[in-house]
Structure formats: structure tokens, C-alpha cells
Amino acid sequence: MRSGMAQLEKISKMIKIALGSIAGFSLLVGGIGIMNMMLVAVSERTREIGLRKALGAKPLDIMAQFLIEAVAMCGVGGAIGVGLGVLAGEGMALLAVKIAKIVPEWPAVISTEWVLIAVSFSAAIGISFGLYPAIKASMLQPKEALRTE
Image (tube, rainbow, N blue to C red; front, top):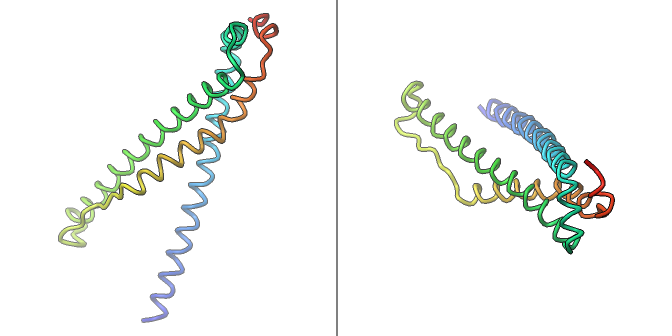
């Protein structure tokens, strides 16, 4: 009996490691995607950035604008992910009760704490991967930026 439990715990640990690795890789790919979108936004809005700087915008203002955009994108993505996760959890609980008849009642438990952690983490991803494009935008020289098409 003990060896069976030990083996189940070992399998459970391996599954957690595999899922954690997949999640980490997905976050990295998503972060790189955010950085790429923000770099495209910087290159498309070079003239706008140059005009704002020529009119007196500080580099910190430009950087804040692009960081806020990156955080907003990641925040929306995180909120959508939480919503889909809640739906999946409810669906799995319903599946366990209605179809598999494993337990008479199995409510999905959604912790507000973990929802806040997930959305905060997605905002942190936005900050970390949006920082390079924001710095690049803030360092543009107005004269050069206005000259580009």
C-alpha cells in the first residue's frame, strides 16, 4: 500500500514539474511576443514620439507610455487567462460529477488570492518585457525621429 502511494506521489511530482516547465516556456514565448509587438509599435510611431519629444515630452513620459501599454496588454491577457481557467475548472468539476460520477458533489474552488497573483504576475511580465522597447522609445532623438517615414 505504501509503495503504491509513494509511486503516485512520484508521478504527481513529475506531472507538476512537466506542467511547470510548459508554463514557464509559455510565459517566455508570450513575453517575447509582447516585446516584439511593443518594438513594432515603437517603430510605427517613431514620428509621433519625435513630435512629442520636440514639444517637450520627457524621456520618462515616453517610457511610461510604452510601459503602461505593455502592462495593459498583459493585464488583459492575464484576465482572459483567468476567465478561461475558471471556465475550465468549472467544466472539469461538472465533468467529474455528472459524467464520471466520481463524487456526488465537487465544486470548483477559485481563490481570489491566486487570481490576484496571476494578474499581478502578468503585469510583471508586461513590465519586464516592455522595458526594452520603452527605453528604446525614450532614447529616440526628436530630429532623427521626425526625419523618418
